[in-house]
Image: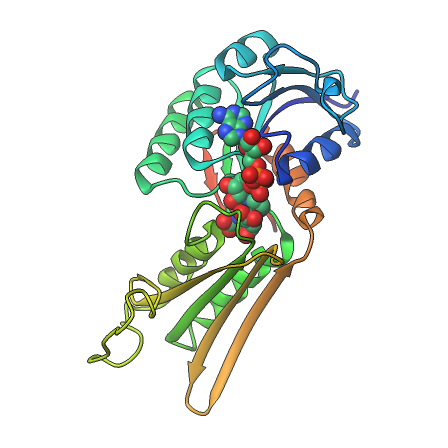
Length: 266
Ligand SMILES: NC(=O)C1=CN([C@@H]2O[C@H](COP(=O)(O)OP(=O)(O)OC[C@H]3O[C@@H](n4cnc5c(N)ncnc54)[C@H](O)[C@@H]3O)[C@@H](O)[C@H]2O)C=CC1
Ligand SMILES: O=C(O)C1=N[C@H](C(=O)O)C[C@H](O)C1
């Protein structure tokens, strides 16, 4: 008989959380055992307009994990909360799949160590969309041939973290491929602070925040007489859901932390 994976979703009323609730409820072999919200403690999700599930709401993650003993936590909240939820999940025997972005390197290292010591899988996924993962992989490939690169990431204006998790991960993947190189003129001066963007090992990263955007990124490589632009657009949050589903299945077979969905696809 197929194993049913029981899932807790943190942030069910958020833009991503709503989509994830629909995904888990409509996927055979998965069960939404509970949700973690800032409000509505001990009510049912169906008490909130727009939801039909009878899953219980908890405001305290520890109480939720102890009472429900789910297999997987999906976190789609805010950087501080996501980190706390991931840690609490691991300490209570629950495998985290973290879509929330904006963790510090120290937090990532701590979760990596905890995941390993508990021998429980964790997936930190800066971007669940398959197209975005390919965009990052293609950029890493291109960096072998083009050493000059700048990243422009564009998101809706409700986003809390900058640069985006995807932008950071892209820069890290490019870093693995190319030698450190400052971008632009060695004597360049900013007359307006920040106009050259953030600097990750010489890779410039620019964050645009505007209403009307969802999640978009272009990685621009410059060479003699040519320009290569690798671009991805998520027009709708449905674009992330096949990746969420893949991660829920994959994390069940892991015993340590994986950072990036590119590491679990063929
Ligand atoms: N990995 C990926 O592919 C994607 C990741 N994201 C990330 O997911 C996160 C959420 O994004 P959105 O849904 O757009 O944000 P949102 O602002 O629409 O939703 C966040 C939700 O978290 C809830 N929340 C905040 N603190 C909480 C707490 N202590 N306990 C329970 N719930 C809490 C809020 O009430 C809100 O409903 C962000 O970090 C974003 O960067 C977003 C899209 C794709
Ligand atoms: O906040 C968002 O919306 C998104 N966040 C992730 C990120 O920071 O890269 C993934 C995607 O870009 C959407």
